[in-house]
Image (cartoon, rainbow, N blue to C red; front, top):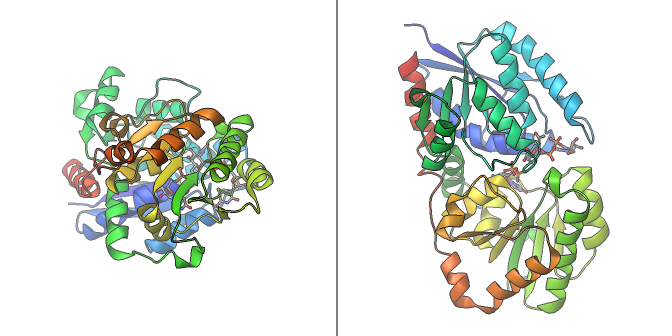
Length: 369
Ligand code: UD1
Ligand code: UDP
């Protein structure tokens, strides 16, 4: 029997982290599957960090990232350049991940070529088209055109059923981010000494990069950070700042050179996992971090009003705080002052996967060959 030829297309840091375990698993099954990896390089530096860690050498690198890129040019670059790759490779199936513009435009490209698309991390929804923007519509769009939906949780499966996706196209697999996390924590645990944090202080880890938080919301987050360090001399913040200029500018303006606020470059994934493990509390608007932190037993305050990842909120490890300065300050203060409430949130939970999602997806791919 001929091997199933899978073309895997991704372009940003989180897609790379979540597709890496799947690429490695497909390679282990090279008797029946073959993988061709195409990176759009919607991200450049922070994508390459992940490719190096997982030892992935792309077959195609479209190198599309531009400084402060916009959604229109990004979409058209991905659409046109993946067309050429799809025509050359002639895959049996195209795999995309999640909700980025790379995923949306690559899925459309495959659909135009009448190649079946499989969506890894299918079915996530906030049901609000502007939050997160443009990710909510990206994933609705991908789910509407793809043939295989690899949904991480029961809730994601329910969302797909509600969207009239046929039951036989939906597979509950768990999220491959947990495969990546468990592998990395086990095999690449790293010292964080190089970050020069004070080991006697409680470390609060912060990340923020959402388009809908650009402008006033991100400024409010920064002001809350300043207020919190001024009120508590036993805490320090560490913030690996996303390279997007819309993040860099306000963050550097409001937080640079302040005592007990460490602005650092984006960390290589293994080091970031070690930092999550050693943090007391995490403040973030990241999707991936919301999924990883509960497995590590780290309380998360989400700097957004809605989430497409409600499972850990229901369990209690994650709380939505939005971007209001007062609300952020009062919630962090409450957790710093109430050990019992903190301990309740710090209970480890694993709603997003068991580390076997890639294996399940590979079994499904083998069964369709
Ligand atoms: C993108 C995704 C978002 C995802 C996020 C993960 C879209 C529309 N957005 O947002 O869903 O949550 O990635 O991080 O798909 N840059 C660099 N070096 C890099 C990466 C980015 O300099 O390695 C800068 C560039 O100026 C680039 C800008 O960041 O133009 C924005 O990158 P872009 O991918 O458009 O948006 P993100 O905010 O990263
Ligand atoms: N991450 C990383 N280095 C950092 C910050 C985040 O490796 O400095 C990882 C994090 O563990 C998670 C992923 O990047 O797996 C999340 O990426 P991001 O927040 O950029 O995107 P999102 O998940 O919101 O789409």
